Length: 331
Ligand SMILES: Nc1ncnc2c1ncn2[C@@H]1O[C@H](COP(=O)(O)OP(=O)(O)OP(=O)(O)O)[C@@H](O)[C@H]1O
Image 1 (tube, rainbow, N blue to C red):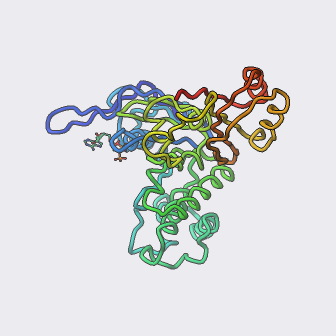
Image 2: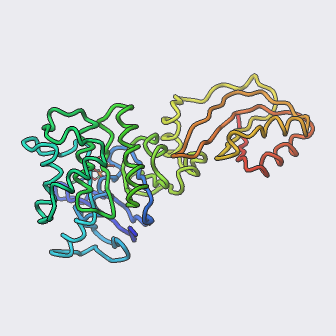
């Protein structure tokens, strides 16, 4: 549904071209929540703004719903923007208008027939029915972002672009806004593309992710694959940050046996697999670290173990065939 084909973007700064995106090839499927993560200056905003043509590519093509929109102008461009809603880090609400009037704004622009009815529906969807007559200054950050979401959904877009939508919010409010986005994605089936510099945002709400580093996509795939097996150093750093790991890993030099990280996904997370394998093969283990969390709604567990015993290979094979990912960790 959204496709970047060899898209580049450079900006002219003081007479010189600064390259913000090197050739990027990326596909975003209809109905998915797609996350783009990267550090400041990686090119996330540029990439996001190429979808609704707030920026134009320097070369390459952008496709939306199978159509090449790279050079869209006039009525075609207005039509495209109506099909793409957008929310922002600092909400961009009109301070002199009430909540209801902010949400009504795009409907008035497009001459919508039953503005009041649609506004009521949208405010109910984002849980703000009781705040319709308040002004933005009377709202919390999370409530302001809900107004932004309602406004972005007014013209029933197929795509919602989220530009660091939770970066200005505290962790609890972030969680509730992300929950609302997941809910909207499910209820309305619209495609959501979000940019962030926090892996935790990706983990909570996205189906797939692309990691952007200095204008290049260095890794992409399902959030579970990228999160559980990060390949690129930048991705590894993001994952470590999300897991609150700091600096070098713990020192296991005094531990005997071979070290493994076991990743359990979905149903295997809660199955008593390890005790079964220990009974069957007689291997021994020390548990060094472990946790269970969620990627979107899928539970996953990771255990770091030191294992030893004559039947170690058989034990590893039994775990693998039960769907456990096993990483041999070098000390
Ligand atoms: N309008 C512009 N004019 C000149 N250079 C720009 C412009 N917009 C972005 N850039 C440059 O392009 C590069 C990518 O910027 P972009 O804003 O896309 O990154 P980002 O990953 O979204 O960063 P941040 O998280 O800080 O917003 C940076 O080097 C930035 O300075």
